[in-house]
Length: 98
Image (cartoon, rainbow, N blue to C red; front, side):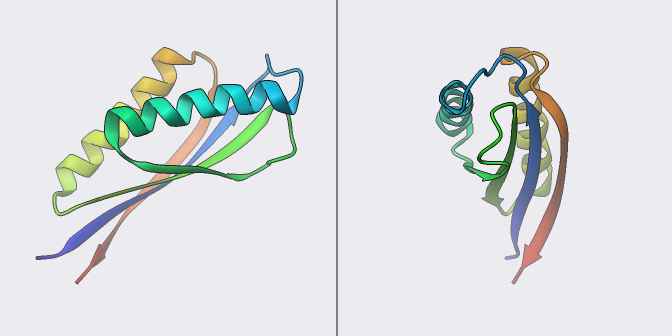
């Protein structure tokens, strides 16, 4: 069996964040929603000290490529509907191991 790993980078713009505290509150809420709904591992990986920008790294493991693509589409949809205007860009790849 081949393990498949979804690896994604999500760039966000947070114009309503007046401080790092505001940004972290918004990012924490988004990360918690993604974790509770999809159990995807997610972390802020870049632009940590910029109040109105964030880059998240996301990883999800499965043996089913269509499931990985579906999860990524659902995560993007969740961000776009729950946090309108936040999603700037995203990219992903599926890596194969074994």
